[in-house]
Length: 255
Image 1 (tube, one colour):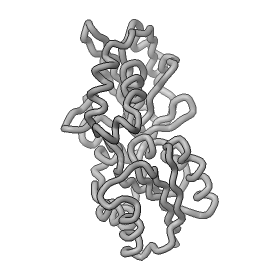
Image 2 (cartoon, one colour):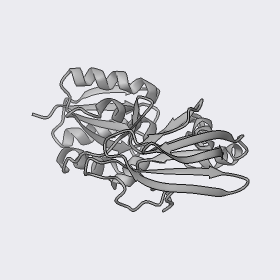
Image 3 (cartoon, rainbow, N blue to C red):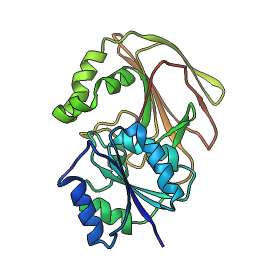
C-alpha cells in the first residue's frame, strides 16, 4: 500500500495554499499523509530522509526548483516516487516534465499518473534534475532571494540578471569524455539536463523531449562570454558515467 508524504516549503504558495493541498489529498482518499514543512529548501533533505525512514514511498514536493532539487538529491536511487506541486517562481522541472500547474491536477497526476524514471546529474556529490551554472547564472540565482521573488515573481531574475551581467570573467577548462572541450575565459557556464526555460525560451539546443526516460542522461553544455558575446554549445551523452569535468568555482547554482 502506498504511503504518502508531503514535504513543503512553507514560504511558497499557489491557489489556496497548503490548506487546499490537504483538502485535495483528502478528497482523493489520502486523509493521513505524513507532513513536513520547512522555511528553507536546504532544510528539506533532513525531512525527506525522516519520512523515508517512516515508510513513505510517494512524496508530494511543494515548492520551486530549489525545493525539487533538494528532494531529488535524496530520492535519486531509491524506489520512492516524487510528485511535484509547482508552487515556486520558475518551476522549470515541472515545465519540462509537462506537469499540471494546479493543485488538483498535480495531486491527480501524483496519485494516478504513470510512474516514470527521470534522469539526474551528479556534480560534486550533489544531484540535480534541471541545470547547474557558474558565473553569471550562479550570481543571478543567488541574487534573486526569496523576498525579491515573492514581490516580483519571474521578473526577479531579469533584475538580478541585469545586475549580474557585469560579473567578472573567470578562467575555465572543460573536458568531455577525457578530451579537451573548452579552455579560456568565461562569463557563464551552464550544464543542463533539460533545455526549456519559460516563455518558450530554450537555453540549450534541446528538444521538448529533453527529459529522458531511457536511463541515459542526455546533457548540454553552454559557455557564454561577454562583451564578446560568443557562445560555445554542445550536447553529449553521459551513459551513466562522469563524462564531463567542469572547472572548480566558488559558487555553482543547482536547479
